[in-house]
Structures are given as C-alpha cells and as structure tokens.
Image 1 (cartoon, rainbow, N blue to C red):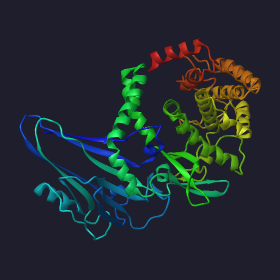
Image 2 (tube, rainbow, N blue to C red; image 1 turned 90 degrees about the vertical axis):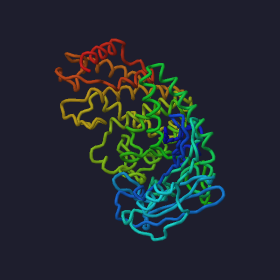
Image 3 (tube, helix red, strand yellow; image 1 turned 45 degrees about the vertical axis):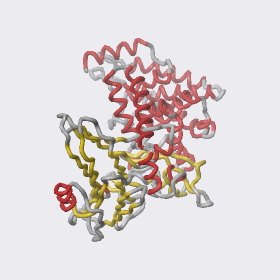
Image 4 (spheres, helix red, strand yellow; image 1 turned 180 degrees about the horizontal axis):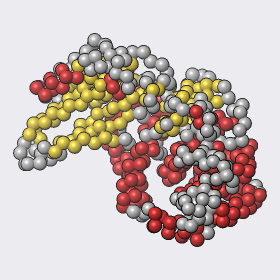
Length: 489
C-alpha cells in the first residue's frame, strides 16, 4: 500500500479570513500498489505537548460530537494571556477535528492505550477520558481513526483532519501607554472556534484549489529566474505566511473593529524591521496591503512614543505576542539598519500601490528618519547591522552605508510621488553614492569596511537599488560584484 500524508497550510493572500485561521489540514490517501485488495484503517492523535514545552503542566480537555463536527479541545489548566516561553505561546486552545462520516471513530485517553487499541481492533471506542492530569502523566492524547474499507488500485478520497491552536485575544499591543487586546480577523465572521473549524473542514476542496492556484502562479513567476528558485519560492511562501497574524481591535461597543486592522509578524521578537524588510518583496508580489498593515503597528508606536531617538526602533518587543515596544534591542539598536529598512520598504510599497498616504499621514516621522539617514549614512561609525556585526571606529560597514544611501534616495522618490521637492535628499544620495564607490573600493571588489583593502563584502544591499530602480550605482559596480562573487563563492 502507498499511504500519502499531506500537511497543507493553505495560502490565499486575498482572503483575510482563510489567511487568519490558525489551523492546518492533514490529509491522508491510500492506494494499492500491487493490484490486490487491502483493508486499510487510518489513525491520528495529538498530545498535550502541543501546549507547552514543560510537560509537567496540568491540562484539561473535552470532546464534543454533532452531526457536523467531532472536536477534541485541550488546554493548559492554568493560563496567563500572552505568556510565551522559549518562543512558544503557552495559552489558548488546542484542537483536533474531523467531519463525522462512516468509519470514523474517536477517543481520548492514554497514548499507549489508544494506539494499542487501534493496532488491535483498527478502531477507537468513542469514549472520553475524564481524568484530567499533567501532560506527561500517562500522556493523554486525542485521537481519531478512519476505516477506509477495502482498497484496490485506485486512490481513496482524502481523509482530512484539522489541527490547530487558537488564542483569543491573540496579540497585546501597547502604544502611547494604551494597551489593546487584539483578536484574529476570522473572529469577525465566526464567533466560536467550533464554527470556524467546521467552515475550515468544509472549505477543504476550495482551499486546496486556491492554494494550488497560488503555488502555480508563484512557481511560474519564479521559474522565469530558475527552476530551483521556483521550488524554494513556493516553500518559503509557507514560512513567511505562517509567521503573520491579521488582527483587529475591539471597539467601544464591544464588537470587533474591522476599520482597525494590523498585521503582526512573530519569530524572534515582534515585528522586527529586518524581518519585515526581508519578507517585503513577497508581500509586494502577493498582496501589498498586508505589508502596509504590517508597518502600521511600528509607525503608530513611534508616533505615540514619548522617546524621540530620531531613528526607527528595531522591533515592537522581545517576546511574541506582546507588542509593547522595543526591549533588548534598545541596548544595541540597529539604528541605521532599521531606519533604512523602514524607508526602503515604504518606498517599495508606494511604488507597488501608488498610494503614499502612509507617509503623508506620518510626514513628521518620515522626515525625521530621512534626516537621520542624511546625517549618519555615509559614515555609519559604530553601528550594529542585521548580520550582528559591530564595526568599531574608525572603520565603517560598507554594506550598511550602501543600504542607507539607497534609503535616502528612496525618501526623495517618495517626496516626488507626493508632489514635493525631494532634490536635497536626492542630490545628497547621489553625492554619497559617488563617494561610497571610492571609499569602499578594495583590491577585490569592495571592502567590508572603509580602508580595509584586504577584505571584501558581498554588498547584498545593492538589491534595493535594483528593486526600487534608484539608479544610484552604475553597471560597473555590479560587474565588479559579479566578478567578486565568481572568484570567492
């Protein structure tokens, strides 16, 4: 028998409801590969290890069944909203669900009992364990089984499970001393998780079709560069999309406010500008609006902050999902890096949409940031970069300076889009670009820092010059870099 298990994280960037659902599909198909008939049963379970890295914590659970849904729900017995340990959120509800059908059975109980019973009888007994206990105490699990019957050479219809962890509220966001507890977008449409999961399971065919269409479009576009790049792009899309949450606030009337939408990205911290910048080309391609909504929490926090540093803060916090403002990044801020990231990303967003409102509505901030770039870009001094390198005076990181110069020209282009005179910033950026070529020159291409002629830098920040079409650097710079890559990589 060939048994195929597929994990599907459906991506539909145009549909905020689908994109905000915190569930994945696990589908199973079976096909006879020898022409003979075989009897097949499928088993799946989840344990409380989904809830916490500390398996000594107590948990509770329940199982509900209707003619539309069988739902295992499990959670930690004691929870604190927005708590996370080692980048794992430790509150909310875990789910394992199926649509009832012939041959489907379910059960909760000790792992060895459930799995042993299935191996022996090929089914579960539709009962619930009510002895609540610690995650690692006789390892309570929440299982389903499906009897597929006799299978010949044709593949079975997919057996589909829903798996997920839901939190409400999902994000704590604080700006200007005001805290918001924000919910995921899908809750505007589904007031209960059971309704959302029921929709999710019944939406399987359409969701898979939509995901396949998205993959095909992305793959076709990426394959114009290379077939290998095409495969990487499709895989990376899931990683990028799985790190965002689309949220709404609660209005004074107690209802979710669809006019206050923000997107948060969580990995190592909250809304880190270097991660937003790195993902920006993807969002520009699939849905620029998501990128705009991702920048808004950072911009609003800076607008309402009582601390005016003159540059962009690196992030909104150390621990997801607590977006309360920068923490450890204040010690060694990537001031020039983050300010450049914000400016370049904003310029790319405006070029893609033609809408510069995000700047016109926050003109004071963007001018402050542009002036910081103007004063600090050519000679970065002792600045931390996204590569984690601290370059001590009198050396200066050439790749960092490169990004700042491009960001300065990006601001000038933004002003032009707004019908304003950006020549002072544009002229400065061109002057800096010319000086940079001389100051960064080395024996082999461009140095890692000014004056260090024996070193070389990949100068990957040149990407933004091409992306934004700033035209700051001549083709001779790119030819030199191509030669450098060919001889060193």
